[in-house]
Length: 100
Image 1: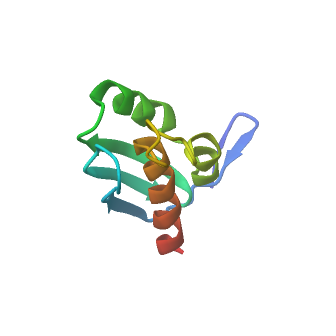
Image 2: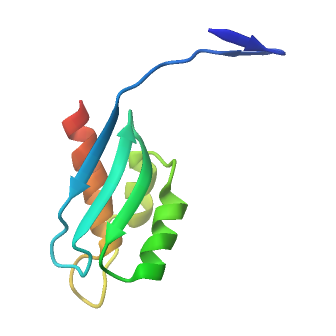
């Protein structure tokens, strides 16, 4: 524990888990990210729509699993029934469950 002004910070060291996911039914071939507790960081997609997936990676960096799911789960790409964003939401939930 450390103090700074009126704030008290409790530093909790959590295990960082790197996760690689192979998406199905989309152009992206691989999704990589780190999970710390329920926070997702260091997101990268291999393949797919480069600009869009870079934007998703930046926007979702530091979000919780539930935030990502609420924004991306169920997103559809051209009637495929899924999308890279939807696959990412599924990946973070799978990683979170595996980390428990």
